[in-house]
Image 1 (tube, rainbow, N blue to C red):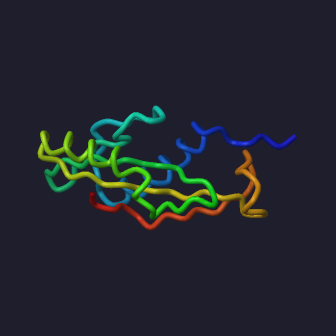
Image 2 (cartoon, rainbow, N blue to C red):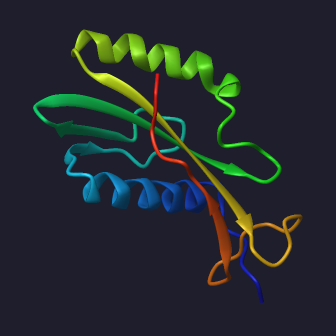
Image 3 (tube, one colour):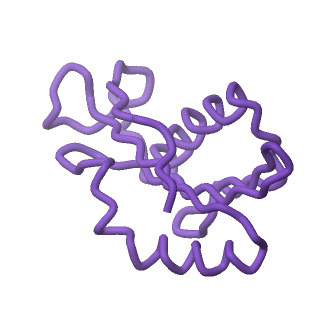
Length: 121
């Protein structure tokens, strides 16, 4: 029987995708938070600069590049980050069932990732 990934599991998958990119790019993790709707997901150091990174898993037909939906959250995070002299980034990760875009993402089945990297806020 197919098991549809929960919102939390999709969020964790998106965080893993972004986390691997951050690690490969030389970011040092200071804090990681995988709790849904609690930002930021990553607090990192790179080149002695603090970075707050907000990760969002976006299901089809949503557009991971559409920041408008999250702007109030992102602006709050940016204001918070400024108190720490940190930069704020958004990482939207689109996740879709590889066999049929209209089906959910299932455990142990192929999926397609639409992720273009960090967007500075």
